[in-house]
Length: 400
Image 1 (tube, rainbow, N blue to C red):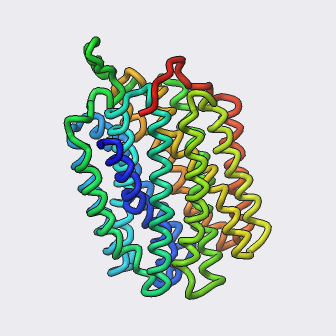
Image 2: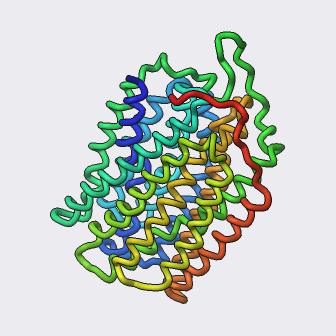
Image 3: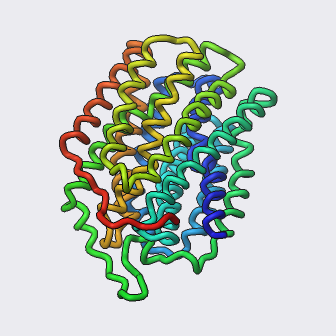
């Protein structure tokens, strides 16, 4: 029962967790009449401020036993921020709302991953995380289709008005997971088997001595610098070339990527057999290929098909992230803190690239922006090839 509830939590949290960002971008461009450069600067600045909080949020997730309440509160606060942006699309409101939304980005995925680890344990984690990712992507597809139809028929503001509904559904799902079923020692990466005493967390400074963690964080920063602006740039091109279809085409781009993500997430369930590094190479290799292909044509059909690589790259990386970190941080008691640290580093890459990509589009066009992003992604791929070791543990567990 608790695992079925975890499925539905991932399904409904898909909208709350990541569904508003791209619609904010398109809304500001096409309805509030913001320029690409202004959008890039504001979203980059707010994102950078918000993601600085991620390590502190991660440490709190490790410490707190109120993980379910944390998800519920965050869902409704994020929905309120989205409504504030469309009601008052002026600089101070958008900046503050997006800072809060960026900070909340460090709450949802790490808390769900911690709950999953607390329910299933380290050995069964690959299968369960793959299932989490599949339900999350399925939720994105459903929500994107639903919002796309409502947005075209009624209003481009539909994603923002529907977000509170999905926050309510998220609340029902998370409360269906019994609080007592979550082992909070396991959830932070400590052993609490009946035959062992749960260890004490190590000092947080141990994180900077983990070479694998530092390499992974640096590669994640390059990955997100290259990957984060690609979908916004694609949907900007689609929206500007097809007025009146902004929300529908944005949803179509998301749907294509999420369908690919559902299939690719199934590979993560086999990560104990396939290994983590080959899957990381596949994820990192998809990004420069996607950037190169986006340069070739402005045709909507072509650009939508290329978004399959978003599912292969971004979808696979996001599914692997909590698994690789669990491998590296096992026994430290700082699983979510490490997630927050990596989240801040990769977030700096992703947020700063919004301003860079916006400037390049303004001065040199979309093709130049895609080429630059592809080159950065290639650097991340090279770092994984040269410096990232395999992290798969020798033990194997039964599926959860």
